[in-house]
Length: 273
Ligand code: DGL
Image 1 (cartoon, rainbow, N blue to C red):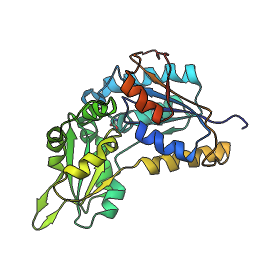
Image 2 (image 1 turned 120 degrees about the vertical axis):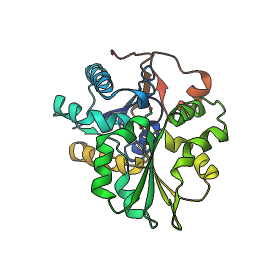
Image 3 (image 1 turned 60 degrees about the vertical axis):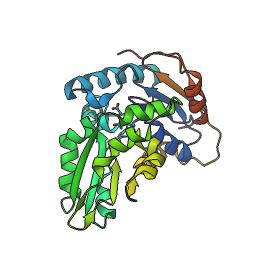
């Protein structure tokens, strides 16, 4: 292959930037399109069949418009339900998903008490239950489905103020104590949450390991790309990095400034839903 790989990174909003930022470190010279389905945000409250239908339709349009070489579903809420359909429908296209990092949490915990902090959708999925049964059967696992954290992270990215008490209330149920033991590892099972991890650390009642799978996802994407396109090298020049919003809305100035820090320029293209 002579042309640089084209990658589509997809999320309901800006959370996928946490994955995008890690991939860019390993594949600086790829051509990136980031699509935020802000018109469908938040995915956490969607019913499963409706969410599958929406993501499938959006992907159809995005694949036609951008012809990506790889798609990263940088969203746990979507990955834990849509990946099988995507892979079945586009068997030749590699999809890299984002699913709760329960395995590393179960490997790293000493107290054997872990929590999974995700959207209400993600923590209710059969897929998440299967990961727990497969990798964390020896642990006590607390599932915490947050209604508001993804929206708080969006507000933070828009440069709006987010109250400590609001964040604190959402993370509090992750901290469990039982017979002298307490939670020592928390899975960030929504790509929006690492955006607020400094706040989580500051507001946590005691220190824990916050597990963000983004670097591992980036390594997986890089490995798959390497098989087709060869290696990239840190420091190489980017080709193009654009962001599209399904609402078609132009990002307000504070958000545009944040996106510029990720090297992303807004494009007024609206994918078909
Ligand atoms: N960023 C998404 C995730 O990883 C979900 C946020 C939402 O739309 O509720 O689950």
